[in-house]
Image 1 (tube, rainbow, N blue to C red):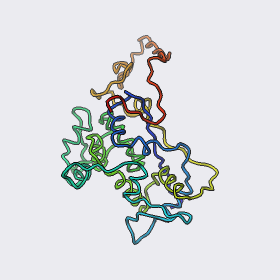
Image 2: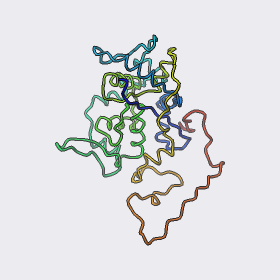
Image 3: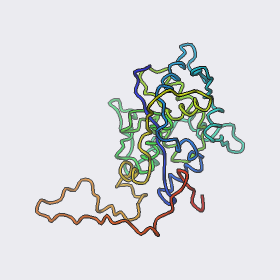
Image 4: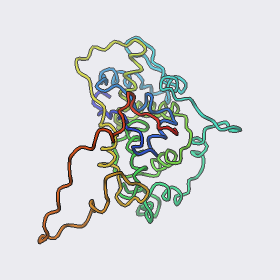
Amino acid sequence: MLARNILPERNVKLYITEFDDFRRELIRRNWHKKLTNLTEGSIDVAIVKEFYANLYVPDDKFPKQVRVRGHLIKFDVDSLNTFLETPVVVEQGESLPCYSRFARLRPDPQELAARLCIPGRGFVLNAEGLLWKLLRKDLTTLAQTWSVLSYSNLAPTSHTSDLNLDRAKLVYRLVMKMNMNLGSLISGQISLIAQSNSSRLGFLALITALCKGQGVTSNSLSFESLNPTINLAYIKKNCWNLDDPSVTFPGIQKSKARRYEAPSTSAAPAPTPSTSAPSTSALPSPVAASILPGPSA
């Protein structure tokens, strides 16, 4: 247990009008309050490792509480939803959130691909002809952004290149704005990590905050930082699919950023784009919290 690697979470910091499809959905889900607004530089790895070490119980595959340095730490569904300020939303006449109802159905691969991939792309099949994965280069900008958040804050994994079928179903539910029980997802993931010998340790900042909230005292001299924040610059650099017709960013022309066209050796070098900063009057005002809803949110 003590030799296992760690996988810190990410924050999200976006201004009004910056990639609103993603930003507004975070707000609607209340994920902008705590899930993606964690304290930077606060991860106490010693506490996290002790949490997971004490949590391992061979006879209990899904424990929901653990003692850390004499303090009882609960991470059951209700405790997590209360801490994260993410109430469960269930549609009228239903007993489960839409996300949970969809999880019980057999997904349509064509529907998954149509929502997550750029036009004309879909699942890659394995040697047996079965669904294998969606390639990262085929994903839409929105699907790539949600997948990045899922890798660190929802279902931590170090396999972040492509989407297998299970991950594709998770990202699909996020893209389709299905209401979900966040506490249930995270509680189950924590239990799975504790019972696995291969998984990296996830939810580091969350576990540190849960423990300190119950009075666990830290004696560490140094703390780990979060993974790089998902902001507009990060999305443009790491998630923007230039072949995605549904997304454009103001001030950037796709034709100037073609992927596979090498310039002729006899051609003059292209002019360097201006790096002068725009007028401050044209910039949105910074927000105190990570995300601030727009006028119609």
